[in-house]
Length: 134
Image 1: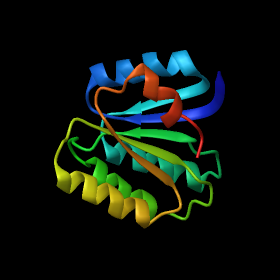
Image 2: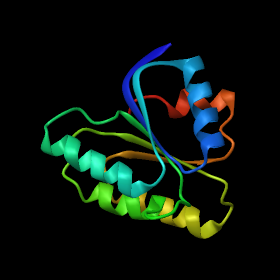
Image 3: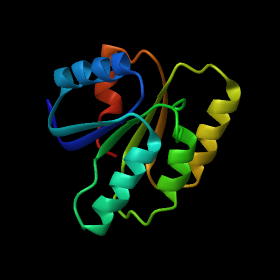
Image 4: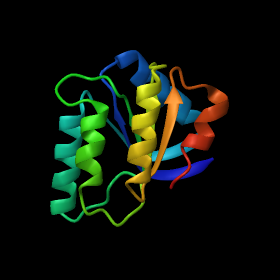
């Protein structure tokens, strides 16, 4: 079982959040799993964490379609921050739109962070691969 200090789950669907947490418990020991219902809450926390010089999460699970600040807006704000540490961001979506895959590829090319594109539901076989620290 891998050891991870902190994971953020940014998703407004409580069933998805529950499912990801359940799957994570089978592959990782995590000190802290924090959930956010939209990208704004998460990016505000990340900015505060950076200002306080504290550790950021090693892995983020990110939904695309959320109210207030969606996943793409979150990524835009996130990659503009000066974060030297490499973070794994797992986009988790039910979208089958090719435009979303193209956006993922664009964001992936604009940052040193590891960004993966995963379709919902996340399966038990895939969770250990996408939970590896970047």
